Length: 472
Image (cartoon, rainbow, N blue to C red; front, top):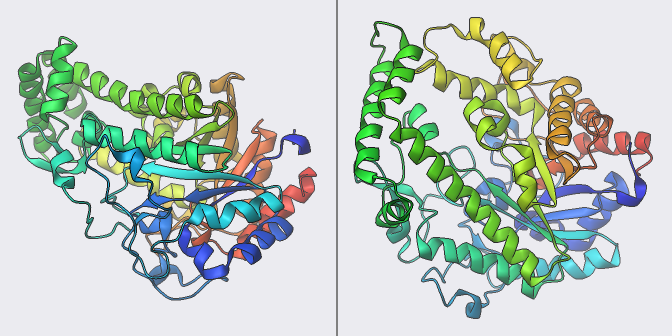
């Protein structure tokens, strides 16, 4: 049940909205019209979804507030630079150079006015920061020497994302979190980790990662034979290439996949090593936050692919994540999620699940993932239903954290659509999503992914639900 004394009603806000609408009018609207008391502010990104205006305006038009015209942001950091925190990494020139935002500090602009209104302030940052398809990534990242920290794939080619095991890149993240925790009167930090693992990358047609000298050295110290791993991944890569090309296998595509894994167990050894190093970064950032100020709350913004992909669901159990979080925010962007699920499964149906038609396998996959949604042919147009999808995922998370962390559901409000026939957000969808959260035992909500892309008319649906719950 809703508890007014523990109210957490958040909204993710990009720097451009603060510039467009002004701090005071925007916060008054949040508080008075929508019942919002927590601000999750995008402070660092090269993705339009995180720091810019609506990225789907060509398809969806402009929202009913803000400035209705494109602004091509270059991205970067939207707080003042504190160089003393970046002496242990060569990544130290990453300030934004955007018109009217350069040399301004978004947190300094917001915090005093938020405090006057009794609102929480939480910087939100997401990894990866660069070259993220579907998130409005900028074409050029002007950080000097960035190519020196990029991943190396199984064929020894430089890839497009920084390596999480590169000391300069990892230390950069340590520095960013310490910078926020020490220099600002904030209430916590929200961290989002949306990296594909080696097998995950391979199954969608990418090459497995990462085999740079830092990953090799770390793995060797853990007793892993890296050359065997590389040979094993090349075998699996060859299988996936054949499967995606439509080649027939004697015993079917799925059995052949299991056979390749059986004869190449090093693939799973490397997968576990890489995922655990990914989790280690989360743990390190949590630890730094708590060491600087134990009162700060560290929240995890949890990728929806964790509940749409059986492999990721197995790899990221909820209770384990409570070891490095005070609260979790499962992403459930209901109207958008039909296409997200469709894309997720389509990639698998091109390779390891090629033996079944999507229509045959969807009911089975729904059973595995605890989903009760529209059939394969209608899922994009129908989206996912708040009363089953948001409720079900919230219930799963609440059960999973087992009382060791709070659950604040990520409610999709005009999450960007990619197709004209994709389900649209409505006030009723938002209203029912909020109600479903509290019915399932959630402690709060975060309207996502960015205020700059939301319609006030749809946020009104949230306000209506909060009134019904006695939270507004």
